[in-house]
Structures are given as structure tokens and as C-alpha cells.
Image 1 (cartoon, helix red, strand yellow):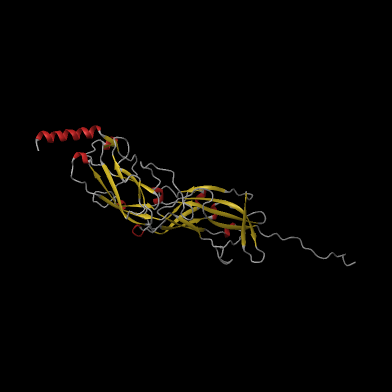
Image 2: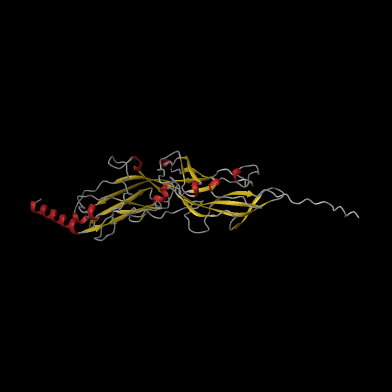
Length: 365
């Protein structure tokens, strides 16, 4: 090939790189990090990507600086370069931009979101390709990484109203606050759960034959008690990362009434969620003994999420979002009809001894 022709190709390439560009995807925060098992890829905890099934997560490819010289400064991609994304297995996997192509506009050709349909492991591959019009026959090597997809968070109450009256988790009435014990909810989640909860007060009725307590309608308040409205608890300023396997954290709301402990760790290789016990200390909820009768204080766990579910709420730029929360059955919260979990604390005023009656002394006349 003549030197003049080679020089012509070089000049054409330079001109194309300078003026024929498309806006790429540059995250604006440090929330995006490298993923993969190559030796130059980030820390060990990011050699794979953890996701929640059914939630779209963002991924972007750093373009070759030799062909996109201004990308690191302005995010511009050279026109007509493409990034091809594939997944194995592919069934049900949804790419928002499976074959992104630079168009000369701000179209984020090297970015895609991916949603995975099932609890499973997946292998994602991506490669950058130069425009066919350039006549380049060399193909870029694929980058690949493993994705582990988990179920959504779920939770339940440990109170079982089918148990006997002597069981501590029955709605067993007490007449002293000191007789109330710390109780628990069970949570499965992909890393430190955040929760929403509330405390309300209800009428309670005792079956005179069986002694079983039934909880009735909500009442506004009990003298001296203020209901706790829906409250968000994030458990301190230093949540665990996904690999933590033991320990506990205390919340910051309502005098630290809520705390959470890990009972089993997240298992990426088998896509098993971590399990947690959410403990509630009733002595920190401001409960009072009613002046008469019997009431039930109902603690409602409204919703929860997890570290990996929250990860799915980050947008394409990685900006901290408003987090999605999930109902007890793992369905994203959509309104007042969502399933929750409750635990009832039944408190009765001490019985009042009434007057004694007899047959009047003069009734026998």
C-alpha cells in the first residue's frame, strides 16, 4: 500500500474521531465500578454482578480510547461504532440497548440496562465493533462477566395465632409493660434490609369461653400513647456489605426500638438470599397500660428492601435514587392493598373489684 494512501486513511480517521461523535455513557458518580474476573478489574467483591430478578440494572462499556479520544473528557463516542450485548441463557433476558450504535447524537450507545427473568446465574458478553465502512477486519475480544439473579425480599411475623394460649407468640394479654418481651419478624433479603413500619392501637376482645384474644378495629389512641406513623428505618450510617455473615445493627428511630441481626449470609453461587431477624423492643415504643379494659398495640411491618434490590434503583448515571420497597410477598409496593406482617401486643388494665351484693337484711319481712 502506498504511503500516501496510508496517510489518507489516517487523516480520515482523525477527522472522524474529532467531528463524527455521539454522546456516550459517563457515570456522574463513583457508584459504577468495574465488573469481571480479568486481572485489571476492580476488587474481589465485584468480579460478578448481583441483581434482583425482574429489575433492570445499568451496565456500560468503557470505549477504546484510541478510537474515542475525547470520551473521558466529554463522553463523546465516534460515530457508527457499535456495542453488541448477548447473554447466556438468553430466554427472558431483556436488553434496553442490545446493539447500541453511535449516531452522532447523545444516545449512550455503549450503555444498556438488563433485566433477568429468574433466580439463576447468567453470563453476559459484550464487544465493541468499528464501522464496517472503515474496512477494519479485526474484531474486538469479548468482555464477559457472571450475573447472579436473586428473588425479591420477603418478610413475615413470628406471631402465630394458631398456637396455644401459653405460647409466648400467642396474643397473650399482660397487665404490666414489664411483662412484654422483645419480639421478632423474619426477613429474607439481598443485603442490609431497610424497612417501613408503624404502631397503631386496636380494640381487643377476649373470648369468655376459650380465652382467645381477637383484635378488632383501630382506635385513635389510648390516653398517654401516641400512635407511631409510617416510619423508615435504615439501621445506622454504616450498613453491611453483601458478604457480611454475622452481626447486628440498631436503628435510630423511636429510641432504637428496632434492631436487625443476620442469621444466614447471602450466597451468590446458589442465589440464596440472606436471612435476618428484625427485633422490636416494646419498652421503646411509648406504650401505656389502658386505664380500663383491654387494647392491642399492633406493630405492622409494611415493607422492606435489600442491598441488591436498592442497587436496581440507581439510574443510568448512578445517581442515588428513591428506593423501591417490597411487600411481605416480595411484590413491589404499589398502594394500600399490599401485604404486610403484624405482631400484636395485648395489654389489659388490672381487673377492678366491683361492689359486693347480698340479700337485703329487711327483705325477709
